Length: 422
Image (spheres, rainbow, N blue to C red):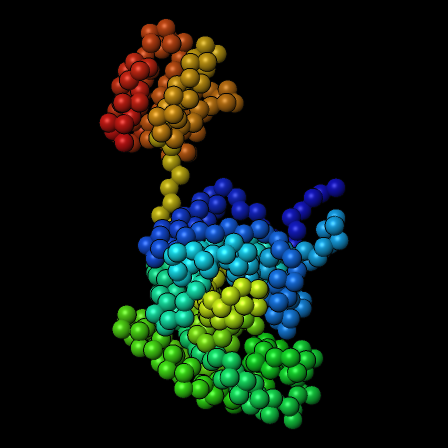
C-alpha cells in the first residue's frame, strides 16, 4: 500500500522549514517589543467551547470542525481557531486576577478546519495570533493593529492595506440587525439556504456570504455605521484619530463583518493589493470580542486580538519575490581518510559542536574528492582533513574554503583557528 499525506495537509521539508523558523522567530521578537508573552493551549478542546465561543451560526461550527468522541464519550474538537482556547485558559487559570492587566498574550500553532483545500487554505494550517484581554481602551485597539502592520513590514511586504470597521456595541448591533432583517426578508427566497437560516439566527452573517456576494441587495444593505449609538461612534472616532496620529493609513469598509460571532466594536483586516496573489487577498484579521470572556464563564473582561496564517504570509512573500535572509551553512566539514582517522574525527566533531560550531563529517565512506564536494555543497567555511598520518602527528590540515588558505595545526588548536577567522 502506498501511504500518502492526508488531503489539505502538507509536509514542510528541510530547506522550507527554515523559512517557517525565521518567521516564527521574527514574530516572537516583535511580541517581545510590544510586551506580549507566549501562551500555549491544547490542540483539542471540548466541542462546546467552540460552539459557544465561536458561534453556532458560523460556517466553522456548522461545517468545518473536526469533532469526535473520545474513549470516555466526550465530544472533542481539534481547535479551528485560537481565541476561544486562549480565553478559556484566561478564565480557568484566573488570569483576570493577575497583577498585570491587560493580559497581553501571543500564540502560534496548528489549527484545523475541514474545508475545500485551495491556494492559501489548508485543512491543517498554522496561525500566529495575539490577544489583549482585560481592557477596553481605543489605544489598545490601535496597538493591536499597529503590531499586525509591523509584522508584515518586518518582512518587507509592499501594498499592505489596513481595512477597519466598527460593529458597534450590543444596542447598536440590535438596531442594525433589525434593519438587515427588514432589508433582506422580502427577497430572502433568492438567497442560498445558509442565508435563509442566517436571517433568523444572525443576519449580519448574510453580508459575509460568498455564494450570494453579487446579489443586488448586498450592495445597498444597511451599514452598521449608520446605526452606531453615540458611545460606539465616539469609540470608533477615537480609534481612527489614534491611527492617524501614528501615521498608519487605513480604509473604512462598512461591509467588513469578520467570520466569527464573537466580534463587536472594532473589526479589521489586513489585505495585500496587487496581482499574483490569487483571489483571496486577506492576510489576517481580528477585532474586539467584548463579552466573550463572560460567555465562557469568566468575569467582565473585554478583549481584542488578531490572527494570521503563516501559509498566506509565505504566499505573499513569494508573490512579491521577497527572499528571507536565511543561510544554512556549516562552519566546518571534517574530511576523513581511513578507519583510524574516523575514530579521531568523531571526537573532533563532538568537541567542535560542544564549542558551538556547526560541523558535519562523512558517514558514507566517500572518497576524499566526494567529501570535498559535500563540504562545498553544504557551504562549509572550513574543511578539516584527518588521515592516519595526521592522527600520528597530532595535527590536522585546516583549509579556508573561501580563500583557499591552508594551515596545519594541533588538534587542540582547531577551535581557536576557526574562531579567529569566522
